[in-house]
Length: 148
Image (cartoon, rainbow, N blue to C red; front, side, top):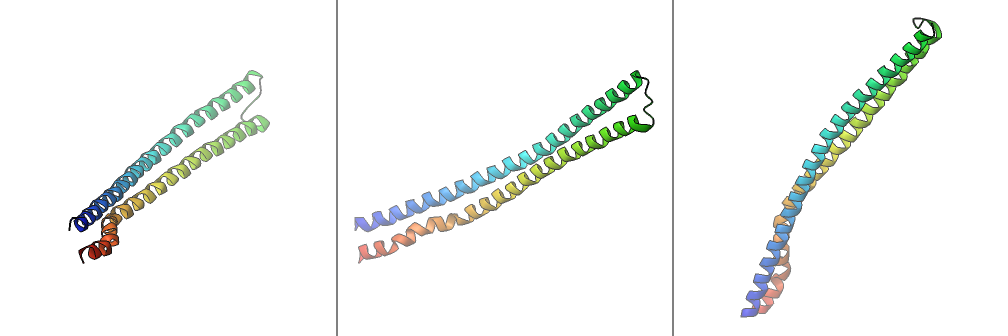
C-alpha cells in the first residue's frame, strides 16, 4: 500500500518541479526581452551620438578646407574649390546617413529579439500546466497497477 502512494507522491513532486522549471524558463525569457528592449534604446541613442559626432567632424573638415583655400588666396565661392567643399559635404552626409541607418537596423534587430523572447516567455508559461501533468499521467498506469 505504501509503494503506490510513493509513486503518486513522486509523480506529483516531479510535476511540480517540471512546472516550476517551465515558469522559471518563462521568467528568464521575459528578462531577456527586457534586456533586448533596453539594448534597442541604447542602439538608437548611440546612433544619434555617433551621427552627431560625425557631423561635427565633417563641419570641421569643411572649415579646414575653406581656411586652406582662403589662406592660399583661392576664392571658395566658385569653381573647383566650391566643388571640393560641396563634395566633402555630400560624402559626409552619406556617412551620417549610413551611421543612422546602421543604428536603426541594430535597434530593429533588438526589438525583434525582444518580441521573440516575449513570445517564448508566453509559451513557456503556458506549458507549465502540461509540465505538471505529464509525469503524473506517465506514472498513472504504474500507480493503477500497484493498487490492483
